[in-house]
Length: 102
Image 1 (cartoon, helix red, strand yellow):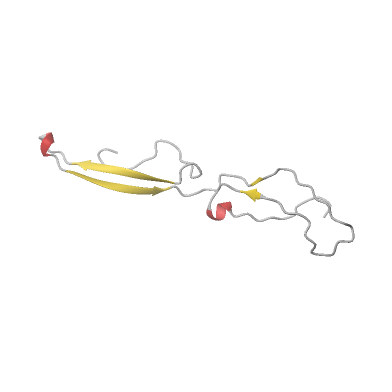
Image 2 (cartoon, helix red, strand yellow):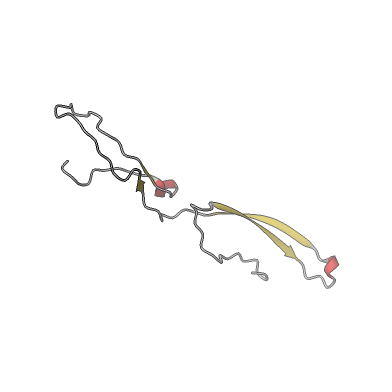
């Protein structure tokens, strides 16, 4: 706001697109003669804090594996790859077998 110095959003932000901004703010006093006006400038660092707005994504989306029937317990069978565009705890993944014949 030109009178109060209040900084407000005009558009939504997306941390995955732009994680931070540097805003340059200039204040000018109300001198009657424009050439005698006094000015000061400050930079405001704005960090966009992540919200949990992205779902995890497996890549590839289909997996298959084979294992011999007499494999020992704890035999490595396969692994999956998954990412989440969110950051911090919102982007940390946990895996669990939640269905199938296991």
